[in-house]
Length: 372
Image 1: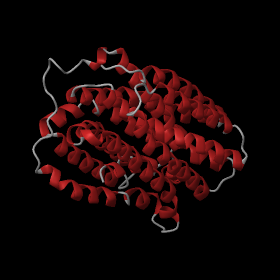
Image 2: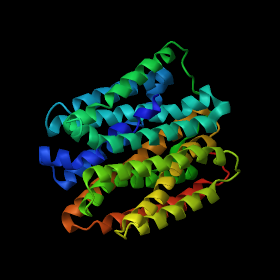
Image 3: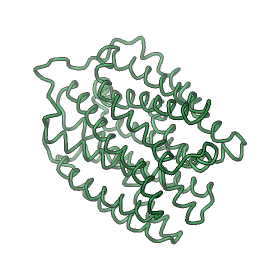
Image 4: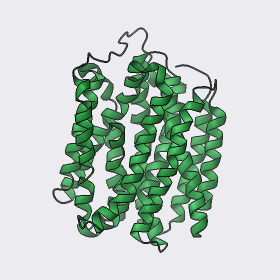
């Protein structure tokens, strides 16, 4: 119930950017910043998430995160550009608190079901990201709620998640190992940085494509509804990769081979987007969707597999999501500015190919059988 809310507030924005841009007079650069802002708050506040989890207990901290997310979703539709940006920043803070702490919480509460729960976490995130991408425009247009009503409608699921999570508030703190002698300094670990850059590359590709794919398809003559639907289909396909990848990974001593296969799929998928053929677009986005789902699950699974202690897991989760999302934050806004300057959608494709090569290289290094 928590995981279904960790992408909807972001995935719902991309298909609605043309409506928001027209209503508020945004430039392409500012529209890109709208998608980048949650990533900046992810990156900044993920550093504080382990301390919040230690102070409140991870279960209570997750509740706080979803509450802040809900507040941000409501605030961002109440006014002009200022409230839109402020509310969007709040959504990022809320998401990252829950996102960082769910991984070590699963490891503490359900260590025997690590693969299954990691798969469910990533799969439900991807499923509801697909639903949000596909239904945002119909909610805005067909239900006549506008972009404001469409964005705020996802708060309903957040309220339901808060109700479901209430029993966790009465449980004893999910204690992380607090021994300073056992917890590792992940910032000095080469392996930790390899996992971090791997996560950053997959995040760059995910958030940049989620933000700009609908706009690119609209520029190629697709309707807003069709573009949103295609983005939704891509994310639905990603469910296959996100669900099955952890089960495969935890059975392998090394994960480098799986990561190589995913990286090759990414590269061929992005190359196919140079063709404006409708069939080729669907084939390419199928390959990319499988990669997106698998790569998110791989990143989350590596955080658990490459650490021995709970506190180290939490610290690595914070590091990966902080530094990784700072890197990811460059994607949507850099491409938005590039589009304003050069007016070419091919730059987006080359941009994504570059990061898919980095993803493959650092991922193969992170996939070796080592511990931090």
